[in-house]
Image (tube, rainbow, N blue to C red; front, side):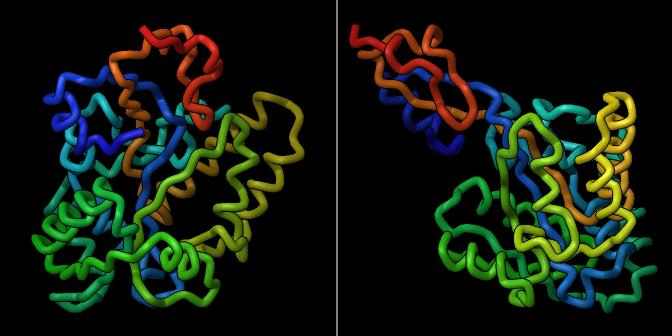
Length: 269
């Protein structure tokens, strides 16, 4: 797979065809609530309204062919996913008002961590830095190698940064997501704690009626949006560069995680 930023360069060589398919991945930004300022809902919502998500996705992924703006923490291939959540449409005036209401000082400094080898995350970071500057927030970019990022993210007492960028592929069963979102879970990088929210995840795991499960998971998605506990950025597509000497990629069935369902269908032309 290749970064979207590399597609133009590779296309120019004339040596590659490109296979693009939904990856089942969510790209997101985390608010680390181990840091006191990030416990402030007005501040989190101010940040959300300060970002033009369409522009953010276009800038980071170079084209909406490679990613679509996300509203929910569940990806479109997940059962009971809904876009019926607060979208936080770009509204700089509302962002400024919420920032003022948060009681945080003008020129507030926030650190944004991301993986230093990830070009898409670097582009996201630069865009977020620019947009938040406009409402009075100074963002320090904190590029980390993948190992350091993993270690800090899983540190339950992590206060090394306020914001971080990440992504996940969790599959079609929403219960799989709860390890990322329930209180005191190691993969809850936001360190968001809400007993009522935890109870919804537990209910969703045991409920057998499909309509009731759908209602539970809709409430989960709406709770995240209303609290702005995490900021969903994009549902991403995988971009695979295939040497033009090879064919059969369509028959091989591109698929998340596996890349191709049946590699035996790929042949040299």
